Length: 289
Image 1: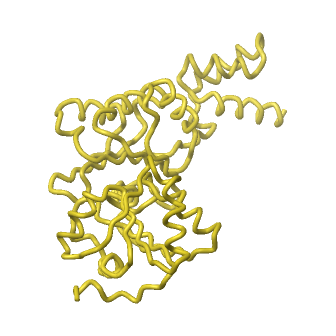
Image 2 (image 1 turned 30 degrees about the vertical axis):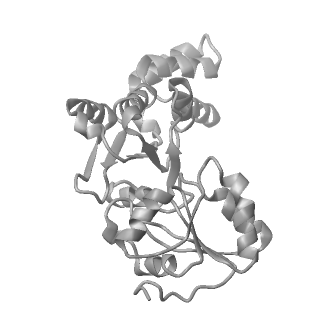
């Protein structure tokens, strides 16, 4: 009997089991015990998971469950769970469902009254967040940005004034484009942390204003290879005192000839100031008169 095959497994239960994102030493004893004891393991890639199980000398039956078949195969797994089987859900790396398959199966389990037990463990987003040095009391996980430039820029614009720290995953071949679009939409001063190859031999965590970070990544092709997380500083709300006096004079002049909304937009474009801050300032001034 395997030393890992000692968990008290409940029948008719789905276990959500995180696996290492790089360093195999990060798997928990509880995860090993569950993987060694369940009746079936639903894996994103059975070959990849097979190598992990082989490393820990775990023999288990595997079932392929990935993005392309999850909805159609969920019925099979639900039937097995109802028949009393215990199933572990794993992805290729990290916590299942976090930008990985599993949502449809877990949702079906909840709808069918099947018990779901989540195990804590590795997650690239949280690992990167813990080392970024940015506010972590409130943050917003956004997954991967859209692949096409227009959609990516639209998404970034929608997040321009999000005050929470933002977390993105990014791929090797789109990193430069995403950083460039951040510069274009948010300006070069927004602070961004690039966490690359976390827990692996070539782990690297670099933080800088996004314009500087883009230049740094361009200097060496290696800096844009591997698994990557981008941690972005949230939008800082400008106070009235932060609005340059030149911008306030321009706003006052334009307000004499234009509606406030248009005057604020033109002033923002001329001076690089947030139009919402100008609009708010003008309304507050009008209320105080």
